[in-house]
Image 1: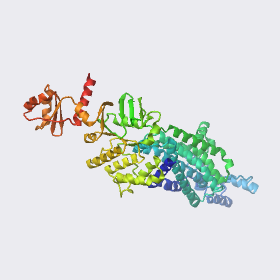
Image 2: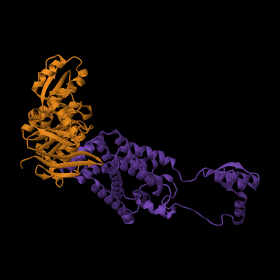
Image 3: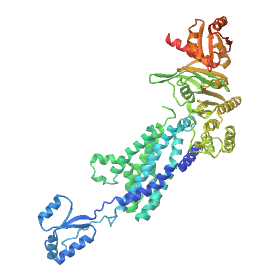
Image 4: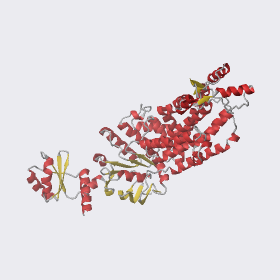
Amino acid sequence: MSRILSVLKKEFIQMRRDRLTFALVFMMPLIQLLLFGYAIQTEVKHIPTIVFDQSLTNESRELLASFSASGYFDVIKTAKNYAEVNQAIAVANSIGLLKSQEILAQKVQFQGPPYDIRVRPWYNPDGITAYFMVPAILGIIVTMTMVIITAVAIVRERERGTLEQLLVTPIKPYELMIGKILPYIALGYIQITVALVVAVTVFDVPIKGSLLELYLLTLFFITASLGLGIFISNIAKTQMQAFQMSFFVMLPSILLSGFMFPRDAMPQFIYYLSAFIPLTYYLDIIRGIILKGIGFQYLVGQVTALLVFSIVLLIVSTLKFKKKIV
Amino acid sequence: MDYAISVHDLTKVFGSFTAVDRLSLNIKPGEICGFLGPNGAGKTTAIRMLCGILTPTSGFGQILGYDLIKESEKIKPHIGYMSQKFSLYDDLTVEENLSFYAGLYSLPNSERKNRIKEMITMAQLTSREDEVVANLSGGWKQRLALGCAIIGRPSIVFLDEPTSGVSPTSRRDFFTIIQKLANQGTTVIVTTHFMDEAERCNRIAFISAGQLLAMDTPDNLKQSAVEGFMVELDLPQAIDQIDRIEQQLYVRECSLHGPLLHVLLDNESNVKELEELVGKSARPITPTLEDVFIALAKKKRKQVVR
C-alpha cells in the first residue's frame, strides 16, 4: 500500500509540473471542440441552385423567394431553357434544381401539396450537427489524451533509466500499474468536465440524461483507453514508437467508431472490426445519455464491452510487465 | 549465512557474445568489493545479475541466503542499487525523490521524516531539499542517488560506476561515505576504473572480457599477481624508449605511467643491465594496481593466443 501511494504521489507531482500534460488536459478540449464543433457540419445548407422558372408568375416568384429564404438553397443562376439546365448539371456546379412549373402545377390542382413528408431527426429535431458531434468529439479527446499520456508513461521511465531503478526496488508490477493509472483517471475526469462545460456553454448542447450516470459510465471508457495506452507502453521501446502506435490506434477510432460515418452502413468486416474500438461503445453511451437521456438499462451491452476491454488490457499488461531488463 | 553474496559460474550470453563468463564470487558481509576492469568487461552485466534484474544464462548462487534465480523478489527489499546514470526523477525535488524511494522500501511513516533528513545530511544537500534535481550538478546528483539507494537500509548496496563524470573532490567524499556504510555492516559492491578508488576497497575483483582474472586484497594483488621485479625509470622522451627496452630479453613488460616508465624485470639482478642500457638509475618500486591490471590483462591475452 505504501508503495502504491508513493507512485501515486510521484505521478501527481510530475503531472502537475509537466506543461505538456496541462496543455493536453485543458487546452485540447477547448481548442478541439471549438475547432471541430464549428467546422464539422453534416447539415447541407447553401446548396447552389439553378432555377428554371417556366411559369414566370407572381406565385412562382413567391415560392422561389421562400426557398432561397430558408437558407438551404442559393439561387446562383436562372436558366432560360432545358439546354442550360443540362449543361449546368453536367459541369456539376449545381446540385439542386427546382422545376417550379411542376410544383406550381401541383399547387393549382390540389390547392396545396398532395401529401406531407417531414423528416425529423427524433432526438435532434432541428438537425443541429453540434448536438450530435460535440459529445462524440468529447469522447475522441478523452481517448486520445488517455492513450497518448499512458503510452508514454512507462516508456519515458525506461528511456530516462528510472525504470531500471524501479526494477531493483521491491515494488510489484500491479502496484506500479495501479499507481500509474489512478492519477490518469482523475485527469480524464477533469478533461471530461472541461469539455462538458464547453459543450453546454458554447454549443448549448442540451444534456437530457443524468450527469451522474454519464460520469459513472465514463469511468469504463477511461480505463479502457488507459489499458490501451499501458499496453502500448509495454511494447514500445522508445517514446517515438509509443507515439506512432498511439496514432495507429487513433485513426481507426476516429474513422470506424461511428464518429463520422454510421456503423450500419459499413461493410460487414469493417463493422465487426469496429467492435474492437472502445470509442464505438462510448459514442453510444455519451450520445445516448446526452441526446436521448436514456438510462443504464439500455447501455448494459456497451458498458460490458468497455469493462471487458479494460480488464483484459490491464491484466495482460500487468502480466507482461516483467521486473527484468530484456 | 557466512557470505552476503555467493555465486557460482554465473554466465550471461547475449546472442553470440558472452558478456559474463563463469563468474564465481564469495563476498562477506561488511566488505567493500571493487569490480575493476575496462569498459565492456561485463561489470555492469554482472551487477545486474546480482541485483536480480537480469536472468543469468547459467550458473546459480545466493544473495543474503535467498536463491538468486528463484527468489529474486525476496532479495529486493534488502538491496540498494545505483546505476551509472544516477536514475533520479529530474522533475522532482531532492526531498520528493527521497520520499518516493522511502515509500517504495515501505519505511514506517514514523521514521520516514528522520531517515530522509539523515540522507539529506549524508548527501550534503541540506538547504537544497526543495531544489528540483534537474538543477543539481553531477556530484550532488550522485550523492542523492546514493541516498535513494540506501534509504531503505539495505544489507548490500550495488554501485555501478558511481563516480563517473564527477569531480575528484566529490569522488573522494563519496568514497568516505561508502567506507562509513561498510563500517556499519553494509556490504558494498562497487565498479570503477579509477585505481585510487580500487585501492580503498577491501578486495578487488579484476574482470576482463567477462572473466574474473583475480580476486584479492589490493596488497596481496600487488605482491602476487605481478611476477618479476618492478623498477621505475625517469627518462626524457620516455615514450620513444618503450620499444627499445621491451626488446631486451630480461624485460617482461614496459609501460608508461604519467611521465615515468614502469619496467618489469625477470629478477633483481637485471637492474644493472637496464641502468647500463638507458644510462640512468632505476628505482625499485612495489607494483601499483595499474601494473597488476596490465600484467593480468597480458596474461589473459597470452592464454587466448595459445
